[in-house]
Structure formats: structure tokens, C-alpha cells
Amino acid sequence: MRYLLLAVLVVIPVALIGWMFWVGHVPPPLEPTPAARKVAGDAELLALFKDPLAGAKVKGEIALYDAKGLFNYIDGAAPIFIERHFRKLAAAELASADGADLTCDVYDMSSPADAESIFSKERSASAKPAPGFAQGVSGPMSLVFRQGRYYVKLTAFDAKAEAALPAVGQAIAGKIP
Image (cartoon, rainbow, N blue to C red; front, side, top):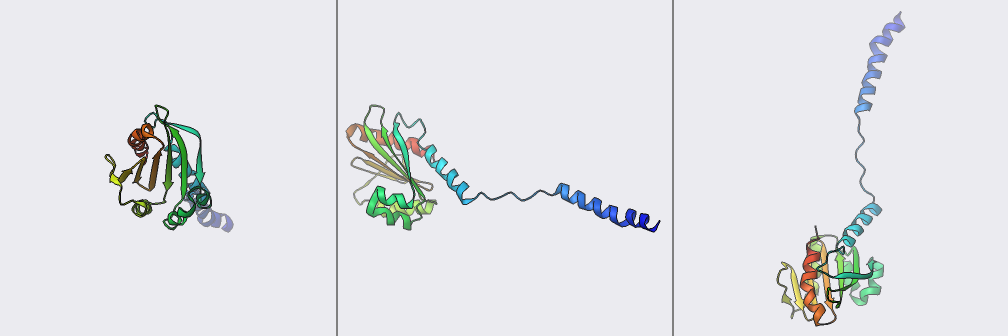
């Protein structure tokens, strides 16, 4: 009889409380792994090139460059970007609505402050403010701007492509979160 009384007064309440705690216990959410964050960041970067781009279309594949690949793409300027927390570059050749060729390089600089830093470092003294861009400059055959953590360079190869740069730049800027 003692054991039955012990079970009723001690073991059953302890087991019941333990069970209620376990059922109500929700494990904390897991933080995304660095690899998962990298894939998510790459998807955001590639999404900037999805249609519409003011009539411009991507020709071929969009190339992604990490810090090692950046040396192959921009050679001597790579350390300047890497010092400013460069994460990834998406580079694409585009054809404007009228068939003119231009390139678009979008640098993911990890943070808005890093994008501001590279924008200031690369800014040419002869560059003029680009209308419609809070942080943008234009020069002959080029438009450069920064928005959020992105630093964007558009380069035209002829006058027709140069005329398309502001509209293509606005289309990309409109997709940046």
C-alpha cells in the first residue's frame, strides 16, 4: 500500500509535469548556416537581373565571382574591393531594346557602409551626378550607383547603349531591397 501511495503522490505528478513541459517545449529556431546564407545572398543578387530591365535582356549566363575570381575579372582593382568587405560580383552582358551592347556589374559589398566606401573610392573627379539616383554618377559611356549594400556599374559600348543606361539602372535599382 505504501508503494501505491508513493506512486500516486510522487511519481505520477512528476511524470505528468515532465510530460506537459516536454509537449509544450519548442526548440529554438536554427540559424541559417553560412552556406545557406551564401545561397540566399546569391539568389538575391541574381534576382536583380530578372526581367524586366527596361527592355534590356541578359545575353548568355550571369557570371558570379567570389574574392578569388574577382582577380580574374578586374585584376589590379580586386584588393580595393576585398578590403571593403566584397562578398560577390554578378556580371552580365546585356542587349538593350534596340540591340545595343552594354555590361552590368553588380557588386554585393556585404553592407551599405561598404558599398558607400567603394563608391567614394572609385568616384572619378570628372563624374557628374546621375539624375534619378541619390548615390549615382555618370561619365562617358558609364553609369555607376550604389544602393543598399550593392555597388552597380553599367558600361555602354556605343551611343545607343549609352542612352539606355539610365533606364536599365533605374530598373535594377527598383529591384534592390
